Length: 391
Ligand SMILES: Cc1ncc(COP(=O)(O)O)c(C=O)c1O
Image (tube, rainbow, N blue to C red; front, side):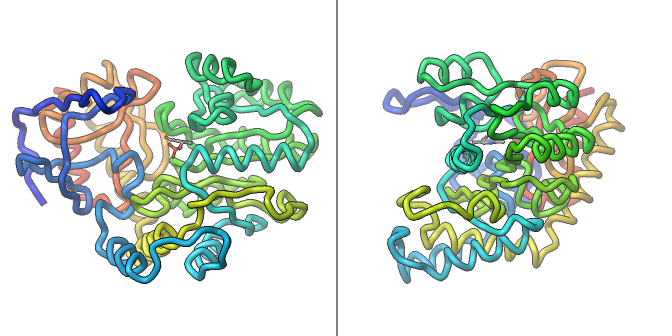
């Protein structure tokens, strides 16, 4: 634990060998524990960005680290060419944690890859091509997912690659969704709580309408829970939190607490006709990330982190409103603070207090996505930093 005292923050630069495709935060972390990072100069930083929603049980949780070390010592890797107990146990666990009838699991390595495979399943199952997605949705950077991601530059990249673009409907617009779903549509792909757009939660009405319209018109409903899933938004799956069950959902980021992993959890109806070789991934379901995910889920369950995310999320939302933040969106520990000034300015000012937060495609939204283990005291420290910055 540290005191997040204001201080001079040095700015990172990208070395020439590394493609400069990411905006860097001004910290070079060398160690992480819980919600805290230690930088090269020994300063501690409070991480309300959660390593981009990945550090779900906090940085380097000892149970997760131990599971990784033990598994690496036993068997670092074998591909999907052999059955592995860790892979089977993780699939079983995810099937138990997702609402019925979501009980068939495909493991891969990232959020985009999970979405790519979910789209592939939907197209294969329906024999149709068109995807409907939602304005503000962010689904990844593979060609098929870029075509569904909102934003001109992503759509242009997909178009250059020859991928047909999804039909994008305005956020929460049931009438537009109704018009968009016809008998060419394979799937509707939705983030139930949009992450990058600024923690925007779709209304239950919109999600229920999506379920009904997909059923009526023979399309598949897919939830992208890469950011909002794994206990972040009030239940293990966002599907359970919002009370609408898709035909498949995808997890990634927070699933293994820090190792690359992706998962598609689908219904039998969507997957029963699959035959050998229809899906695949050399590294998907490797023993080490599976052992990490099992340990990570074990911590989430044992320490009641889903309930903690709800309680601390509520504390942050109430605290932010008390500071004059006009609107707070999202659920649990995926929150969007709607500010009266550019969020990037507030983010930069918080860096001076050694506090990490996220921005969003909405330039006035500051995004909070800390570990699910974020404590009430850490929430108070974040609010104290915000109070000074917003004053
Ligand atoms: C909702 C959502 N879907 C998909 C992705 C892509 O995941 P990845 O970067 O692991 O490919 C992201 C990443 O930010 C995301 O937030």
